[in-house]
Length: 299
Image (cartoon, rainbow, N blue to C red; front, top):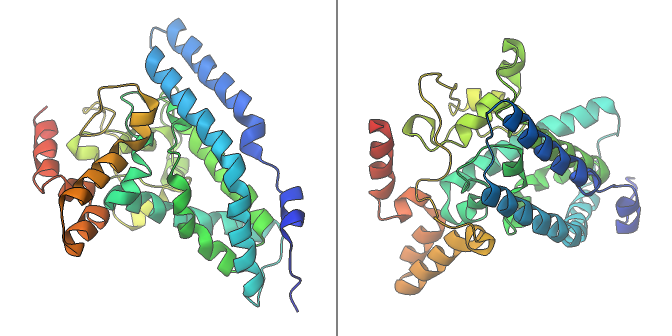
């Protein structure tokens, strides 16, 4: 019979890697600033950097409190299934691959469903692309944990699940840079690179809704969402409906505010459903996304 695990046991054996390495990540971002200035390629803007840093620090603190709730759920699911997967190097790698597949779909749907976009837009509403952009994580994205629950249902141990998830986040941090140029072809075919992720953060027509992979780019190749960086088309970063403020509260909640306003202005269940579940472009009166794409395709 499978041994049941307790919350205390998991919390004691699951170090919060992100909390420990946060000073190092901030240091790397500052090093990138210095490197850019030395080579006359500074890709940081002061207000944008401070905004991203503030949003990231609040997200880190919020994460301390949500960790327990996260574990309660995944432990409960792990305990109710009658099977478990042994803990070793091979199964840890398998867990990473399974989680990365789920992260691809979580990320993709966060661009395709309006209320999920509200939990993710903060990460994209900067016109800069650098290591500090990785700090810019929404304070409401915790609801997307539902996408990762199959990892527990498959029988992966919660401690392995948590550690692998944090390693995936650290890898994600590393691709938010323009300092690293193209990597070897074999590597770029399998793994997400800064070049791939630069495309994902661009709002040019050619680059919209591409390269959702977290650590592995193979999912984009399989599901036809891959786009190589075109050396003849410089990426323009940000979102189509770009906010003109550095107010972190607004940048975290502006799509939520828009959703609630729209839902208050309609009466039928169907209209409210559409506001929540249609794509962000469709919610903007249908023509918004096409018009915006057209504008960028002309540039």
